Amino acid sequence: MPFIPHTEKETRQMLEAIGVRQIDELFDEIPDELINEKLNHVPSAMGEAAIRQLSKKRAEIDNAYVNFIGAGAYEHHIPAAVWQLATRGEFYSAYTPYQAEASQGTLQLLYEYQTMMASLTAMDVSNASLYEGASALAEAVLMAVRTRCKKRRVLMPETVHPRYRETAQTIVKNQGIILSSVAYSAEIGCIDLNRLKDELSEDVAAIVIPQPNYFGILEDVDGLVDLAHDNACLVIAVVNPLSLAVLKAPGDWGETGADIVVGEGQPLGIPLSSGGPYFGFMCSSQKLVRQMPGRLVGRTVDVDGKQGFTLTLQAREQHIRRSKATSNICTNQGLMVTAATLYMSLMGPAGMEQAAQASHTNTRKLIEKLTSIDGVEAEFNSTVFHECVLRIDAPMDDLLRAMTAQGIIAGKALAADFNNLQNCLLVCATELRTEEEMDEYALHLERIVSKRRLDPPCARKM
Image: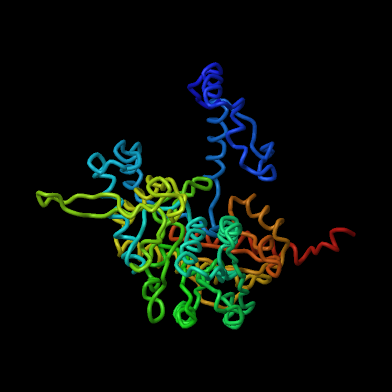
């Protein structure tokens, strides 16, 4: 039951005072076709005890498996101090820092976070923060179109995370913005440069470049950035922040660097947690800062020369006329940003590099072990970070079910999102995966694949 402090009598009195019969009349400007009468997919309410039992069961399920799935959410080591500090009352219960004089601790933390993210991405400025990576990409598209005024088309490669593409489309489709899909090369799993060139025209505001892309492959970011800028297009980079500990930062791509950088901050100290909450980050060049959505924190000095922090450039609906606002973002993921700031501070550049390098090394080992099995091969011949697409000679649903029975989450099946990747699996190995776990994965996979080869479906039917 929601907590609504007004009685039915008080609600009637308020409606009578403004001349309205029922609350629904306050929303009569909403078209009927946009109103959903029933929330069919929302489960029935549960009591506190039942919810505790359900949460406990799901937590036990999550902890029972060795995880080789990534696809945008990654299992990394999180130093114990991160959440020990993040859940202190000063951070855990802190609200939006509208009153700078009462929120210096929160503001300083956000300022430190912005500084770290700007340094990590080699960009001029960072905001703090966005809901998650997918909506951050959508905001970047809107930002690019605002900057390019009359240009209303953005090139969206198929190598961008499918959920990011869907989210961006949902948010921008009713604003006259076209997201034009760009195919990938079937041989190498990267953006098809010829297809990209075919899509370029005077109405293109920006090109989205993922690094690494959804398949875990490294794109030719230098060439793509230079091509975009030669055609007067902005570059929106979608990056894994941990990978930047070992890969070239977006601000250094090509001759002039990316213009906007977004992504999912989950790898920076946020547990998988059955799907969230996570946070999105956004960085940009200085010339675009006034088009950046969300909030920025600035540092200054008071009349006595003491350091102080305050919110600045708040082009949100809460602070400016709607027609002038850059976004309707009304909050940020402050607690997640707190954890990410602590993670980056505790790990430091060397620790983050070590985690990223170990993830890459483990993935190479895993690929070598799995592709030595008859019936398993790498789908693309390209350099990867810590994920790889494998083509496996076995029905994917059956394979995943059999691996799960052995306590292994084997990866992400790709057929639902990519028609030409039937029987393909996206696998990931972070620094947490051990040699023993990878050997066990290979052992069970070989048994499943060889059993199918020795006992084909036609034989089983006879």
